Structures are given as C-alpha cells and as structure tokens.
Image (cartoon, rainbow, N blue to C red; front, side, top):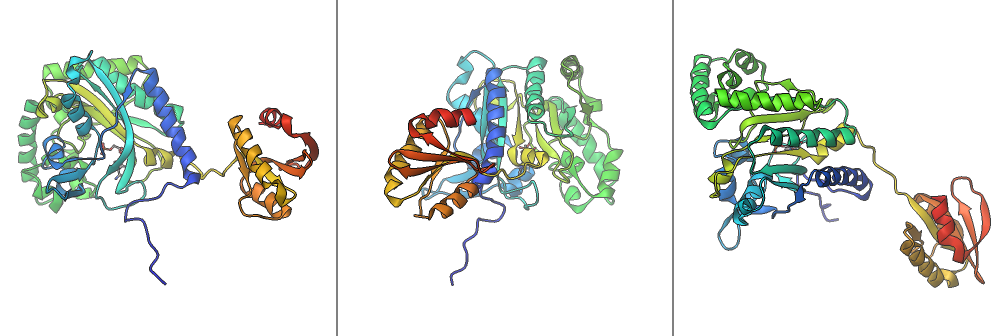
Length: 413
Ligand code: AMP
C-alpha cells in the first residue's frame, strides 16, 4: 500500500466542523472594523523577499530563521508573508494612498507563514486578523486601534484577557538605549544564555524575550527603555494612557515588552489570554512611524496590530460544532428521487438548509442519515403529492401539504 499523504509539518486542515467557530471570529471582526470605518485590504500571500528585510529587520528572528523563502522560476527571491504590516505599507506607497484623506484605516484577514517549531498555538501556516491606521501620529489613533482589539476580544468573550502596554520611544533614543543595554549585557555575559550572548551586538533588546531563568534574572535588573524616553515620547505615551483610562480599558505597563520586529516606535502593546500556556499572546502591535518612508513613501506615521485566529479559538476552547440542517428530504419510493431533489432546491431557495439522500438508501437508512446530518425535520415524500413531516427530536410525525412546507419549516426554525 502507498504511504498515506499528510499535510506538511506545522500546517493543518480546517474541516467543516471547525469552520463555524472561525467564521464567527471573522464576521465579528468584519463588523467591528466596518463600524469603525476600516476598509478591507487583501495583499498577495507572497512578496519580494527584500520587502521583509527592509521592514521587519535583518537581525530579527523572523528574517533570520523563520521565513519561507525561495527563488521562483524567473530567479526572483520570493517570501511567503510572515506578517501583514509590511505588505499593507507597500500597498499604501504603491497606490499613492497618501493622497487620500488621512489617516487611511485598513484591515485584513488571511494566512501567514513562519518556519517555527510547531506546538499548541504555534504553526507554520496560521491566520491573522489585523488593523492599520496609516497617516496619524495622534495618540487618539493609538487608543482607537487598541480599543478595537479590546472590543473584538470582549465581543467574542475571550476569557482572562490582559493588555500589556509600553513605549519604545523614537529611533534615536532607542539607539542610545541599545548601547547602554549592550554594555550592561557584556557586564553579565557569563550569566545569559548563548543565544542572547551571540546577539548582544546585533539585537540586544531580544534578551527581554528570553525564557531561561538565569537570563530572566539578569534582565530583571537591566536598564529599561521606558525610563529613557524623551519628553515628547513620554507626553505621547501619557496621552495614550489617559485616553485608555478615559475609555475604561485596563492595562499594565510592561517595561520588558519589546516585540520582535524592528519597525516599532513609541506605543507597543500585546493582549494575552489565560490558559494558553507558553503562547499566551493573542494579539499585539504598535506604532511604526518610520516604516512608510523606509519603503519609499513620504514620512507617514502609523499604528496597527495583528491577532492570531488560532490563538483566539484556543483561548475560547471552542468545541467542534456538529452539523445542523433544517430538513432532510427522504423518499418512500425511488421514483420520488427527482421530486426530492426539486423540493430540496425549492427549500434552499427559501433560505433553509436542506439535505437529501445521495446513495439510494432504504427509508430506514435515510432516517439514520438525516439524524447524522443533524436535521431538525425529515420530510418523507410518499408519492401522489402526499408527504409526512417527522420531528427528529421528538419522533412526532404528521401529514403535510408540500406546498406549505417552506413556511412550516421556516416557522419551526
Ligand atoms: P506578531 O505578528 O508576531 O506580532 O503576532 C501577532 C499574533 O499572531 C500573535 O499574537 C499570535 O496570536 C499570532 N501568531 C504569531 N505567530 C504565530 C504562529 N506561528 N502560529 C500561530 N499564531 C501566531
């Protein structure tokens, strides 16, 4: 026998039983965004590799070891998108969106790809919902996008949500702070992990993400960027905090929140949920005031976030949902099969979910099939225009007028 084909490592199929919970998340997001005036954008699932080197950053984990990069048949280096912001900004620049009324508010939903070690909540193909407000440095823009994610998680009733907030300041302050942190890390070089030691020069901030106890101990006493912010950055951060306070959105200032992408400036935030183990972050983002200019556009401040659909579903502990349908059309005699198909079609046009037997089963077999399909009612066509309607839960049966079926079933919904 041939070897059974399997999905690639770190990927999964979304089966019909899983779809409903996902659709609920996506449609809740679509509503939250529509109500706030965000337009949907879809960009390709692959981009020129260079885009991610320029935006996400050469020294980040994503660019160094997590991208699916390959040469296409024309010899161009292509990368499956590991995140959404870079491509949205590329599209903003490419389509001259700076000429539109600012800020431009966009949202997206789709698959993303990272070559990571798979575990619960971490996959090689996963799905994100994201929002970007491009063209405003107003703290109101920060508060608005944070509020949207907070609202979405509340609407979905995700349990144990916490908001972590920090500011990374502007690039020059960060560059100075990086030097200070390098010096501190070199002084404690013997106590930090090899991974952190190897990146003291290239990406010292990443040490805050370390999971091993000795490094965590060293980082607890490390100087914090939030204590080095300039007056303007502090003022901006203070306003964001004031707006969140006024909106009743609780948060915790987290001086170790650095986030793994180079393009962030000023406000950064992350939402966590309880019960997710090591992968407790459900979504996060921040301000990226330099990115659009970096990609060849005019100087344009912006802020955004992305949330993982799989993490939301895990946090909700969504059970697989059983199939449900309104009606199963069964036949007493095989001669009725064409009539059954016509009736199922008519009921579908009336907005009902209708199924029928496609395997020539006996009447008993059809009733069993109706049960498995989760039908609320079964209609049995008896010939001569007669039909019986059976309530699948109670087992009650009665004769019905076929012409009145769409109305009767709609009422029974
Ligand atoms: P990031 O783009 O790294 O800020 O991630 C934003 C969100 O995407 C995270 O909070 C997760 O919910 C989700 N996410 C990131 N990477 C993965 C992954 N490998 N598998 C599943 N979800 C992910």
